[in-house]
Length: 260
Image (tube, rainbow, N blue to C red; front, side):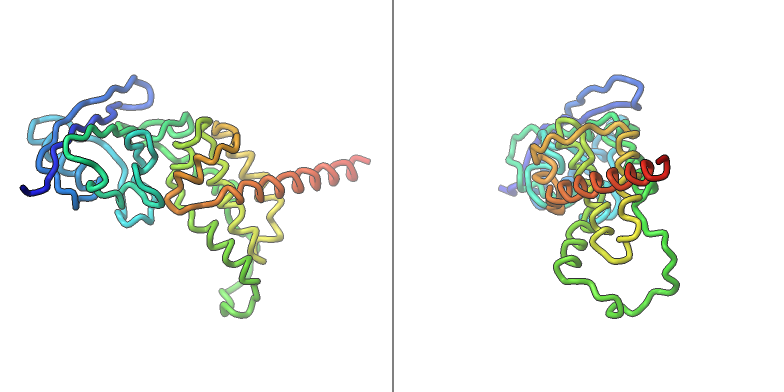
């Protein structure tokens, strides 16, 4: 016995966002349990092409759990049946011989399908462009120890900065909310001294862009945290909400004072 597996793979097929998609059933044999999930898909594509069929489209890049490109819903779970990993870090030993595996794209109107399970996550890029940066000129980079940052703040900033922008939080949320992603990007800058001066402007701009992109509202069910491959905490959503309310109040006060 080799220990290799025979599997049934049901993959989502869709030419683009304007046409209806469907599931295609593919039988695979002799799949090693030591393969990564993406390696299994590579084998599947080789088989499809040998049969004269079109290869299955899916995103991938670094295959090291860093880039966040490998966005697949596997048996109903973003990145599959394991925790704190991306799809490229999922191994076939998490499945059993004879299993049926269902592979789908991120389901969100803000992430239109490009083809099959490859989706356009440009909405995240536009949210970052709206305010996820520091524009204050600081000259050349100073030595790291010249600007003291309390360790608790630096640790929290690092925790938030671990977000890789994969979109699993959106895929897991019943409302397709992007609050966990946006809050991580807002928070990792606002914890640092360099990001403080622009934090009100930043949170207003990024939340406004998030709403323009068509993401849903957060209803605090925490699927986002459970599915996040980097374990980003929903505490950052609470922090962003506080910053947003303070920024909104400050802006309203400025307008009232100016008009008055």
